Image (cartoon, rainbow, N blue to C red; front, side, top):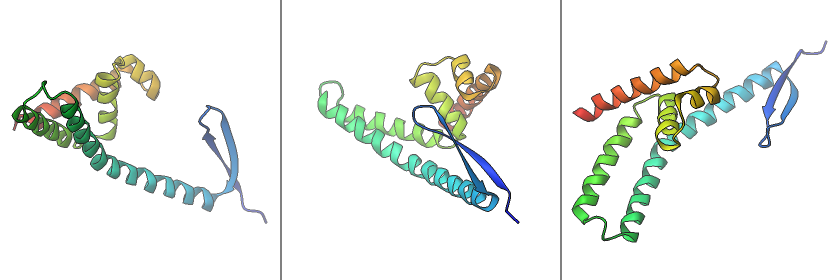
Length: 139
């Protein structure tokens, strides 16, 4: 008797879909592996983003030495460190939405369309994240 097969869909880089049929145990193993990889990436990103960010600040300070005196740079770096630590206390969705809104300059509606949720969900998420950041940074 054959084991039942499950169809898994993957999106390629060019947007097309690939369907693969696998057994249920293989599907579960692939899902577990994917969750572990995503978890490791989140952990790595928390540490690497800040290191890259500080390196970028240092590079900018070296390229534009007249812009800041060393004391101002240290104060900015400490402020950015506090912000980075506070951001890491937000959920991944909140961090992503804040980045898309404030860095990529997307509207709440555009973010909602990208994520397949309604605009109110994105607005609430961003508002809640900003309140959390305010509390964390007010200390």
